[in-house]
Image 1 (cartoon, rainbow, N blue to C red):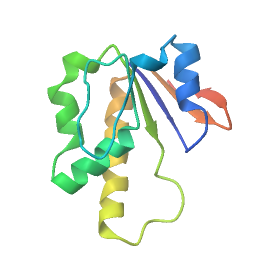
Image 2: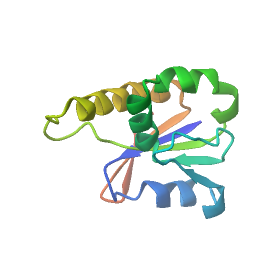
Image 3: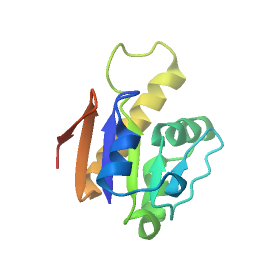
Image 4: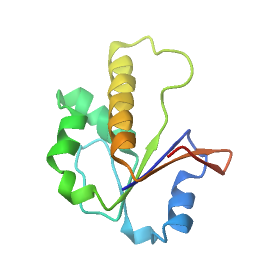
Length: 125
């Protein structure tokens, strides 16, 4: 599994497409309904999945662990929401924490971890 993180509009998706030869139709984009195609070649916007988990009382790390065989060969993309001012609202703080925990887990499981900043890839692992 290859894991890509970075801020909004930093080129994460474009990097996945060029570096790992992922076609646009192979990218599953998470949204607020919590559904994930665990077998997709690339899963984008994991931060949306963690927001759904917070709102639903689900554990994102636990869900990823339970579907581990399905996503292990995928490219996973998550926006880094850990920077900046700590949110005032409890839900947003919980979302930030859940996303951080999921990112830490995925980074530990990944073959490679890349951080995108200003369109530049920084290899972390």
